Image (tube, rainbow, N blue to C red):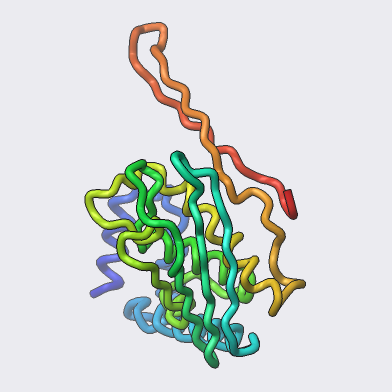
Length: 216
């Protein structure tokens, strides 16, 4: 049974797995054969709450744009958010084309940071799951910097992708000015240190830098 499978996995993980132990206790306490129906209900309620949050916004199109330095020329990020009833369509038409450098973003990364920005603005209390993102649809032109196509390099996608929540908040500001943050720490920058340990073993250390609230 699914219950026995979970129990076997917990036994293999060892008794220090507190989360596994609590999960088994919950399944046993409520007489559940598995957690599928429970997870489906959570997703259903999350979707309903997200749709209610979107539905509270006035229908319309909300636009914004931002620029980053880029390399050979500035990078333009453009967004148009269309609110229709309880659904939201976020489109990045007008953003710069993909680059020869590794700053390109693939569409799933674009979708992730878009939904993060939307959710922080309109429904931060709703759990993160498949249901909470069903009403939000994200698109970007193929070959653009926010929907890069193979073999475009993407290793530094965070340099561009981290600007998207601020871009979203700027677009939604006319509708919900009291619920969005002024752009502050979108431009994530990393410090990478490489070297050799005393014994000659190489090492690499990456320090992620970011922070601050409100306008910069």
